[in-house]
Length: 213
Length: 213
DNA sequence: ATTTTTTTGTTGCCACGGCAACAAAGGAGG
DNA sequence: CCTCCTTTGTTGCCGTGGCAACAAAAAAAT
Image 1 (spheres, chains in turn yellow, purple, blue, orange):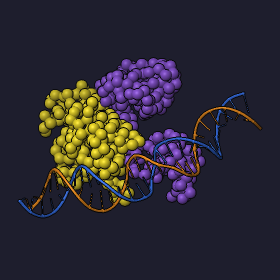
Image 2: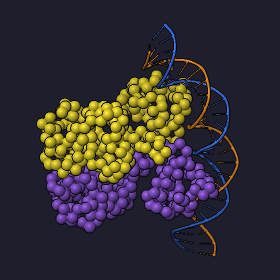
Image 3: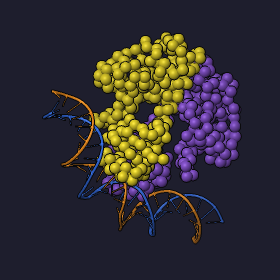
Image 4: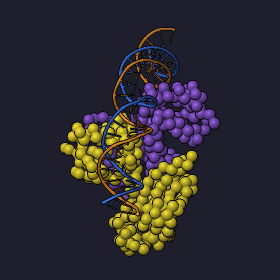
């Protein structure tokens, strides 16, 4: 078990290798491997485990009646998944699928909540924080989605990025993905970006942006 | 302290009065009162407490530069607030304000995560579930907001309501609020609802709806 | 280097829906 | 009952932005 990797995850942040090892034993953690495309679990199942990606990629996907698949989230090395599903204690609204061959560490939620000692307490704080951060990330997105115009959505999003990362900054999306994220059409997005650049409100090439002020 | 009320809250659900009392003492809970309009805490503050509304109403409000206030959430008797703020451990993106004179029970988060015993474990499960449910509620809303047309947003939202509550069902919004929730214009919403009713896709009066099939 | 595929930019068309202004209906209070 | 105020429905106008189709650029594959 690669404790150094775990130490860098949000879930085990601030914990000593000894504490991590202790928590793993105490909680009944286990490691599993999945091939490309394999389901860790399916939409509608009740799950009481959460996972950490040790290697590979895990996607959260929502399958609509009609077969359409909607990408909901993606986790790579060190990422935590299944926390929100297990925490809600309801049938999962998404399937979890290995986008690439993946090795994951699985932790039973209930053991984490009941376990005692300072290491467990720290872990729980981390878990709760992880979940809350996912909430606020989503909250931020709804702020973009409820802006009335494409221009305002872009200004708000890019302004947030500049504030967070400084100038220049690189966004984690290509045009199509950004359009999806902001809930707009890709060509309309390109058009508006062009306009903003001509007006000197922003400069960019590909996913690298620079904003004045 | 009204233990019967607490027993009916999501945070203390499934716990005996004795357990609740024990948790309150063990964690250092305290009761506070706030007059109408008083701030429980302000945007930007770091908070490590969460609260339960014993009486009155507490609003989460986001103040934008420019003075514009955006209503983010509201909790009434039995409702839990501040959980997501405290859990994230970051400066609060919202202010909490007593919309009506309010009595609240405040619980230090850290004590809840570190406390031992089955009652504490249950409480933590409940807390985590509360947070996760707020996430999925928001997730559902983004599903509406990313639908491309007003019609599709309505169909999706009303379809969800019918599935959840059965026919007929009453939505918790008036027209203006529903428009805001779905991120559309109120008159356009009324227009579309009218069209759908003429096509037999829905029947309604005010906030009471009925959908075929 | 050449070909193929992916990503991004551009443009014309036109419909959806925002906006404003008003009418009608419903509720509350006298 | 009548008045006042809030909520909901209706309609015309017109701009934003969805959509499709193509061009250009970049990246990947051969």
